[in-house]
Length: 178
Image 1 (spheres, rainbow, N blue to C red):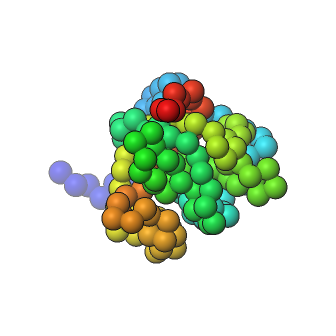
Image 2 (cartoon, rainbow, N blue to C red):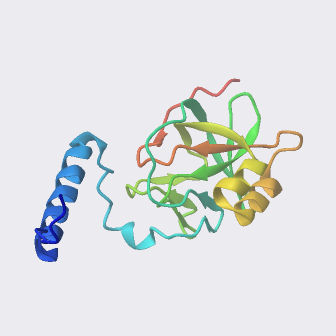
């Protein structure tokens, strides 16, 4: 039965309750192992929202959960404005790097979010996927797709799309055939 009497909580009480509820959900919803890696203080200033810096094509921040699982291995090569990964089998692929990756033009090196430097000629490995340049239009826009398209190797219309995680790239020692 409605009596016309109002027995509601004040707006202040509702705001405090909602704040506590949201804090509890956020606090319980993400475990310590799911937190993004701490940012390197030297690279945070360069954690830009654009997708191209020099020859580096990169994901947009923030980092994503790891999902792509193809193993990527090759030697880093720079040809004009194209950073390429040359595999042991010979194909050359443009690379989309994780967010926070920058380019050191003077040192001719890719600088990862961690601050680790990958100089031209280094052998690297990582996890990611192979994508065609049309997919890059959807994911990163026309500018990245156009750059990738200008860098692809002949008939192979694919780009290495590294995982957008801080640890997606590592130096490796490869045995080059004779």
